[in-house]
Length: 227
Figure (tube, one colour):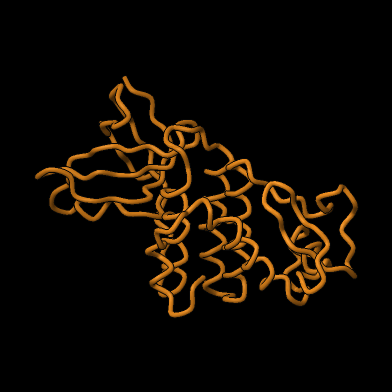
């Protein structure tokens, strides 16, 4: 009997005549491509994103077959920009997370971010902090952490100085750059600090761009103003 494992559906598309090709996020297996037969009747709506499932997989190739898929918790419900934001998280993982690389921490970050997005529907000012925190958590898991306390030379960041980011080095003092106070606040997730959200957005875009390449994110196009 195949073991049951928790999973989220990140993406689905038709595959052959009666199947779907799913992109799953699982703690131990990471991002997994798997095929499942389409559900019929009342069950056809059951395979939705933002819902925790248990799955049993078979197959030795990179493309697995789903033998069982059962709902473990109700789906998170999103509308408008909150739905677009949740789709953005899914697309980032599909584009950036390597095949079959374990994702225990990422799975936790993703689950926490869905919960934070749900809460943000009642407090919309929390939307951007949720997205920025997930982006930097994902970058950290990909081996691209940001040191929010020190510059490239190892000196402690100074709230009164300004900095820019140099790839593979870190922050360097640069007049006209980002305020050190904002960088220190981001590291503490202090989003009340003036400029912290704007700086976090600019820096996350800078770090994500070489990973994403020239192909635009479809989820960003859903926003009139990009996330």
